[in-house]
Image (cartoon, rainbow, N blue to C red; front, side, top):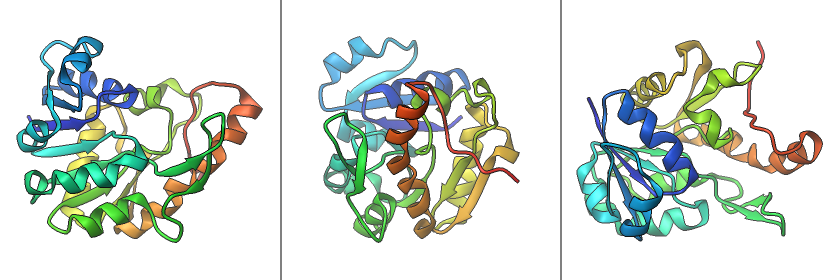
Length: 212
């Protein structure tokens, strides 16, 4: 059992908290509004608390906060995150009127790299940011096997996150370890394609996949 702190209480947090709890992990969700989040997240055995309390409680911390706000919030939680594995599933982008990505907020880099630079005592691993939230804990629901990418400087942290992905139903052969945190740039850029895909296919769940 791993103690997992999920920062954020939106759609992605709801998609991950229940399945990880069902897999036997201890889950605490951190929110800026814990009372409202607790009402919106009725998952048995999942505790909802303030962001600093959640960050302190988790051995592994998962960032599901909005990408544009992530860096500032995580900097404020730095004392509680030191030495921990931080799983970053957010994407930091500029958006159009429909909410689709138009440009990265960190051109020439990635949100994962910025978080690692700002929090050098944290072991950042980027993953699960190339798919609809409904696919994150149900990869077999798609007609084509999706890919879950891992990017992070610490190989041990990447192995830890890979194990947590298997608990969400990801077969090991669908998990692709890309290497250091700089490799997060391409997966984060996938969001720039999402608007066009939604216009072409409609609002159906999909994910990035690499054929081989």
